[in-house]
Amino acid sequence: MEIRYKIDYVTIDTGIIYALADIKDSWHKQSVDFISTFKGRLVVPSTVIPEACYLLNEYLGQSAEMGFINSLINRELIVEHFSDHDLTRCVELLRKYDNLNLGFVDASVIAISERLKIQKILTTDRRHFSVVKPKHCGSFILLP
Image 1 (spheres, one colour):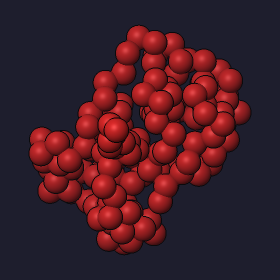
Image 2 (cartoon, rainbow, N blue to C red):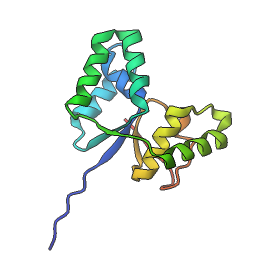
Image 3 (cartoon, helix red, strand yellow):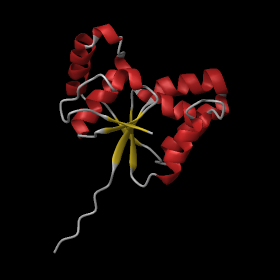
Image 4 (cartoon, rainbow, N blue to C red):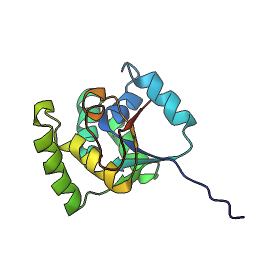
């Protein structure tokens, strides 16, 4: 009998990256608790990186931004770059959900999660990700 180990993959969004760094953020404790017990792999879409860096630097300073960059260097997160297909899907999502003002970064998180067949998104954004219906599953599981 073959034993297979399934690694749990979760896509991480900008809000959680920020919350992890900001002890005053209302999502900080939940985010830290989740990360400290999570045994799977965190996938960060490349589109999230500049947005997270901007927010970290603007509101918490360069050391917070550098901490995040070091987590990328140390491979604490798996960076997933977008494909041409993902860009096409982003346009579809932006058009379909134009009333939500979804935005490119959130659309890319969805498109990349769909392509990788990841159902779980680690996010503070319940407004967008709870409404969008992904192609690969009935709905996203929003964490923490």
